[in-house]
Amino acid sequence: MSAALPAIRVRHLWHRFGTMDVLRDVSFEVGQGEIFGFIGPNGAGKTTTIRIMATLLEPLSGKVEIDGIDVALAPERVRRLIGYMPDHAGVYERITIREFLEFFAAAYAVPDRAVVGAVIELTELGKLQHRLVAELSKGMKQRLQIARILLHDPKVLVLDEPASDLDPRARIEVRDLLLELKDLGKTIFLSSHILTELSDICTSVGILERGSLVVSGPISEIAERLAARNAPPGADGKREPPTPQSPFLPGNEAGPVHNAERAQTAGGALVPGAARKRLRLRVIGDARSIAPLIEGGGGVLGVEAGLAGQLTVHYVGDERFVAEVVRHLVSRGVGIVGVEPERNELERIFLEVTRGDLQ
Image (cartoon, rainbow, N blue to C red; front, side, top):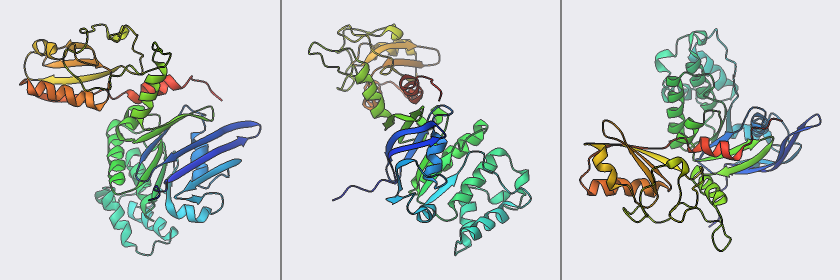
């Protein structure tokens, strides 16, 4: 059986404005049904890449395919497959939400205008549909733009900074809407500077700097590759990641390491920052009496007991570590009412693989 066709395939993409190369040999793929985060500092080339994908620019060289269709050779076919929302997209303000969407449904030549009502319901704009667009908040206007690009039922959504300038509640609402669209089978490609929120929803990311793609793939796999790259060489000269591959087992290390900033493996090697993580637990009872049940376990770098049953575990490992710690505590009769793995892994990856250079 052949592999599924990627929703987006970019191969050796170059683009230049004047004498400056803004994209340099960029290649990546986005699978069907993924939420792919496109990350980079201002001037890295994100918007140029997005405009090429949206058929608004032709690449200097290279190829971009949407669902197997070349954007340069068949732009009209590609436009029927994508929904494109640019950063700071303008709106017609002196008409109502429903009139706005009916206008674009006609522009897209949507045969069944009942889709307008369906899109209004999906984006939860029903109570506002007869309100003038000028009266909407920034967050509601962003939601309206997402409704607009859904009218022709595209397979791929290309969003440039969809949460730009939004307040926290509006960002959460946009995030939840994107997750709902993913559940409906949409592939979502979005750029953003809000890394903590991207880490909550993205299945994969690509990081761009000075026009070059420095890394791409699932966040957990990127973190593992970086940990392996940064690990000190062993006796055989090979670099091995310090992350234990076996599940958490209480007491199988030499003992707890209380200084997580200078954490070392059992063999004395410094654990690189890319591998260190934090797990916050809230337990029923005195956290100080529960901490010894975790200290010394495989992958545990240190345990901090706080007030109101708060425990912070510094560790190296993956999702299996978290699951095993919870299982271990529950098997010892500990009541757990909160589990919060560290959520800034994407920020750590971004700071490690980029240098802060500008074009």
